[in-house]
Length: 359
Ligand code: ATP
Image (cartoon, rainbow, N blue to C red; front, side):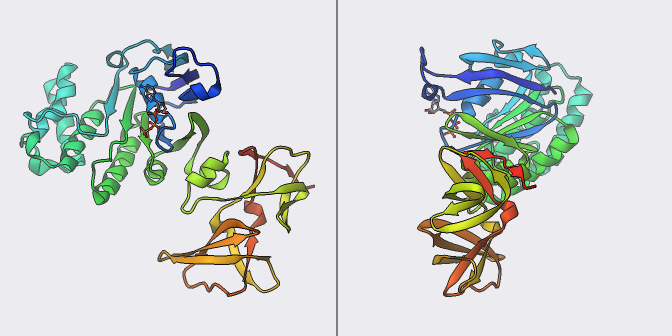
């Protein structure tokens, strides 16, 4: 296991990049802790695979260095980095049995036979493949084959890191949940440094201690699931995390008050001299409804019933706003909205601004 340092890393696929837009990965400078579980999360094309490939050694970055436990590995080939990789589609030997497939990475590294038998048996148990252990891999389903791929990554105890590139894509939804939980459990048990690429927020939030959110080639936030929920550092994080995402409303701010259209919304912090594009962010969970003259007038467009909650989609001063209400709440015809002041975030040019505590 290793601490991974990303030292002023950036990558462009162009031979002579000039502007920021020419970089598929904009500069990232960060240390990922030994034994941490990280998820790289973001939409298609945001640079997740580029970053993963730089860490695995499939790609040499245009700028900066990668260090494993302080040792510069930027120019090393993947096979010289002592990492395990699990890809989107199973990488296994069809003519070998499940047991032989799992043993293969260990046989290759000259691990003692007794130790191999023990670890392979453990892994077969963990992956619930006992009934199929002596079957040829070609006879298994796509789910089972991908389980073997996961097992081949996890069976090695000595790796610097295990990298997963959307490993659950071919797995059916029910099994996805089981395998994700299993991976989390294994991370706790074995303590490997794990990096998991996904565009699915549920996968990222349930697997990772720290989620690395990427947007247009930039790492916009590295945080715990709670941090991403409570204080998104960028409006993209607010919008991408959560279902529905954070409400983002253009506003002006003067002292401790934000003005959205003709509505004055009190803030519990002071913000002085804000310039640029200013927006107010509030999650649907912290918007409540009133009626009549109390609160801000809204026009309700639709109500979604999702079991434990109702999601109300409305317009406030011409801007879309969602509210998440407990099951059984009523939605008055003349509905108004309230924002929980303590849960309001302010953004300047899409980035979070921390106000000064009110005196
Ligand atoms: P996906 O989820 O679709 O795999 P991603 O977040 O992993 O996307 P990358 O594959 O890292 O994103 O791509 C980032 C950007 O770099 C994209 O604009 C992509 O078109 C570009 N890109 C990726 N690989 C290459 C390449 N080999 N040559 C040129 N451009 C590339």
